[in-house]
Length: 195
Image (tube, rainbow, N blue to C red):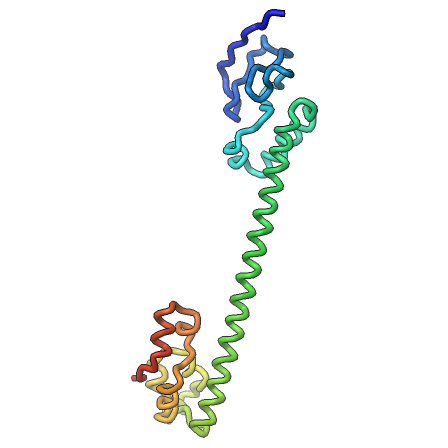
């Protein structure tokens, strides 16, 4: 039987040339079909990876429904879509797991920070015999624990000389020094004088 040449001049949204209506029920000459079976209109046998990645999840679900009807001839396309949906599920699951691990690390660091502030406050209380706030700090009702984490200007304004001396040998556990960059931690541990 002589082969009939069909000219494809229209592309579907997958970039696959679509046969004119006159070629209905003829074998598809595309590389994906290789003249083995008819090519349903607008339904490539094999999908381009870039196209798959560019489609939304809802679009993929709809396409998969189309491929179910042509599984005997277009099974590969259906498998590609199913694989892409699985890939996205795995990527999402991995992203969720990374977020959960990051949240746990932040919570652990926050707990360690609070514990360190409390330990240092207890040590300072013992070394200063409880005299950590100067007269102005007591008059204003300042919380002495805020001197351990707040700005240095607060320490200069409300701390007793005993507490300032304590901080010079035991750097304050500020949030910047605890959670900040390597440089801010180095500055914190350098023991620079307050004030």
